[in-house]
Picture 1 (cartoon, helix red, strand yellow):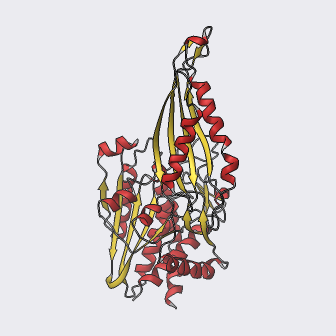
Picture 2 (cartoon, rainbow, N blue to C red):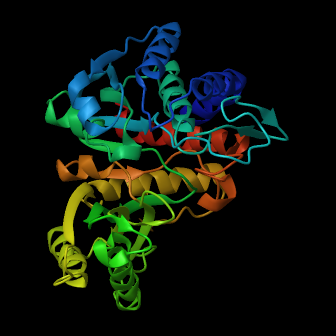
Picture 3 (cartoon, rainbow, N blue to C red):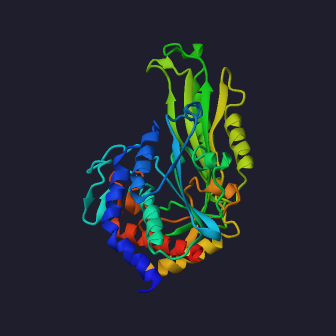
Length: 409
């Protein structure tokens, strides 16, 4: 039997074990917030011991995690060194998830299997790729052929907060410096670029007053309304800005949350808004942040009794292709054609992910893993998130074949 056929046959033979492994990964909750994610890392570290693997546990200092807005983070690195002379390829998936929310017909942490699908929070993004990557590596090693270089599995736990204490922290602590990275995907496509993201918290301070005598106060909500009008008034201008990156259209901007006021009959003395500005890879994040801050400040300039605080919650940079990423794309596309029987598109996405942090460190990175044809059909981050088991099987084969291309002697 040909080597690559042996590789895919091993994945078929061990697929029931792979699905059971994914069920266990889904069944340990990692809602972020609150972000108490160390127990999941401990569980995964214990699970891989069954394969004879040792997972390094890298605990992020508690105070740093709490200042960040989470409770606990333990990032894992599993190192698999082979012969001298080859590259180090890292595979990164994140274990933190958005809370399940309402509307589920299956238990969000059940890992229920029905009609060829597995259901659960992060079944499609991105606990599935804990399973994809681990079983791709196991299949490669089971071949028993000479390999050069090394593999690293990075399982990190703060992508929903931006990744700074996940891949960002591992890189900053100089715990890793791979030559190539494949990070968790969310559809058949290979993602080679993604948007940047700016999130701001805008606090409008006014002065409370009795509803019967509103002139005694300074209405923070009226001022906040002017800011809202300014933000949403910009949307037609943003639509005119077009990205040169395939798969990415225009920048977007919205206010996702508003809190304020004390009672129905009281002039609101304080309003807090949280806004999100997605930046296409062609934009300069520093310039965009300055523009957005000016837009907000100008909206209430000269308003009596109104004071503004603007706090940056997140500034994530775009992922852009680096020299070397084309090798990852070529191999994934070739193997995708062989396994899936169709052309796998490489393009940008308007989403953002923590893979950008590898790119910022000069490491070529692409996103590819188990996922459906399009993100919406998986219900990712919504109720009844699901993944077709056949897509898990196929992605595992594509990744395993790509690792073979990079590491076989």
